[in-house]
Image (cartoon, rainbow over all chains, first blue to last red; front, top):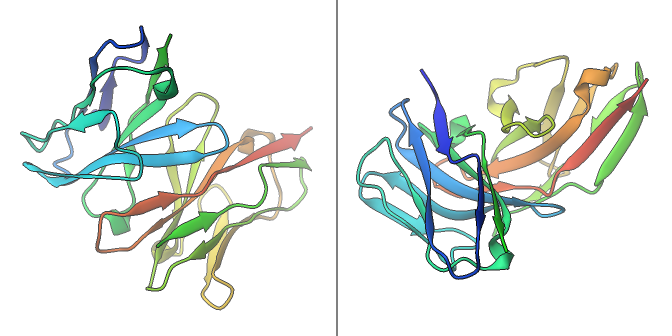
Length: 112
Length: 109
């Protein structure tokens, strides 16, 4: 039982490049979320999903896309990277939000 | 709208001293509240959820609806408690899961 797995762990992008951050969970959780973590700002919700085929925007969705074709996978796409997207990105999953979320180990992204 | 505040960015205590990490929230319904801990460069780990009324690693937290607070307490801090602590709130039935800005706890020898 691997939990929530994120790849890559580290990434450097040039401004304007696109990429996909991968997230997979093997706990059959319906709820999945992407957060970004920035100093002094805590974690801010980017996008979330309440099940396969269902996604919605969080607090800071601009510049990011998501899809949820399977229960297990929830990739995050950066369409055209900007330096403001330099951050640590965490994926999380939950069977039900009231139980709390299980987090992945994070992806540290630097946009130059 | 939900909001979670943690007034202290940094809290330093000596080993063996009591610790209280403050968390206040604003939410009109009945919230589910959590504390998460993040050790240096590691993933966030669920420490406590108020619904469970459990004690993990000597930490406890009590929901005070009158003061809209969910402070985290430990009677005797240990050096291994040094970490970033986040308070979080969930509506319970919806997706919104909101984190506070976090408090860095430093336990000095």
